[in-house]
Image 1: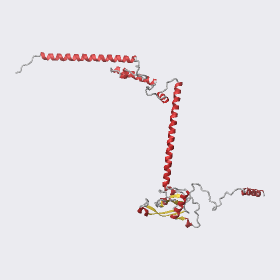
Image 2: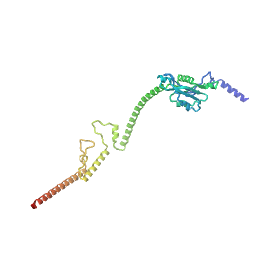
Image 3: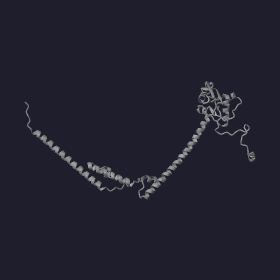
Length: 316
């Protein structure tokens, strides 16, 4: 008895709610945007003729063998009205065997097949489930009118428009990204300069050029560490030149100032000593060469005098 009362109470509650089940066929169901029913063929309005050329790709790829297609020569191509050499002769689709997999649409090279939303393709007789070319083309025109398909030319124009708008957006994005990169670099330069100041070190050259651009007539500032390294290298070159008895290099003999080109830098005592030794070696070698040349001249004169003092022999 209690169960019966509960059942009646549930029935009364549900009777007051709106119905959930759609009264088909008086009320059409709401289909999902990607709902797929059996495939249909598309129509080329410019020629006019089907997009299908009867290439048999869909028939070969169909897993249930529900498609039967034949190809023939296109008479409009012979007349010069169409660019398609071949055209479909007949196209039969057995909807009873079709599993709506969409492989025919995926493998079609001419955009000639699309998936429809004809969910109510039921018939009272099985032979009526075989759709011919005319029925499939009419169904394709209905799908185009519903907006589920657009010609390839319209798709290309839409892609071009999207690409152009995307290029403009990409240019704006690139400009904004450049601004962000410049701001990040400036911030990093400020942080490095601040840390160098906290450690009591000099600001590196790249930080000076980043934070403040030098004037056109001013000489670029040189890091003291770089100047010290250059001076050390000049000393080594001068020392090696002195050991080889050569003249010191130009940068060692007359070094230019790194910070002020008009003011000369004082000469290092070691560089001066190297120059003095080099000068002494050059003078010593010059004296040795002069003595050798004088000795050679004396020996040649003695040989010529001895040849003249010998008596000559008379010819018989």
